[in-house]
Length: 97
Ligand code: SF4
Image (cartoon, rainbow, N blue to C red; front, side, top):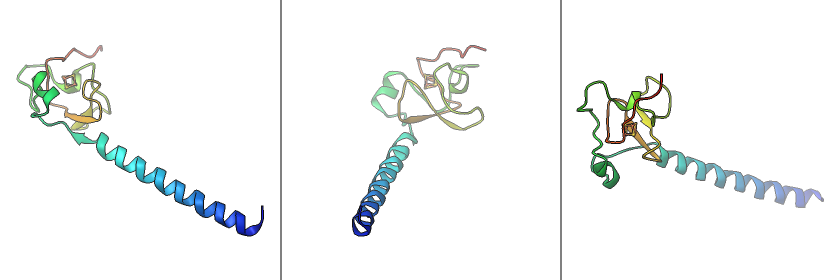
């Protein structure tokens, strides 16, 4: 590979990396959107940010993802959205101890 071709190749690769990185950022932003109580699926499952059921919250549901202690976490039922740790929906099932 000549020096010129190598330079062109490196320029192209750098551009590709930027594209991939920006794509990753937009996916990450989409994945961190908080679930709205007005979301169609949320309404169907009666999701609310504050549980009406004593002892049953998103934080102790088997569908919750992410680390304990975070206020907004991922949920297997609502892909790409974050649910409130103190929330609840009709799909709640106790997380095994
Ligand atoms: S399934 Fe429902 S109760 Fe369980 S974490 Fe997801 S939103 Fe919360």
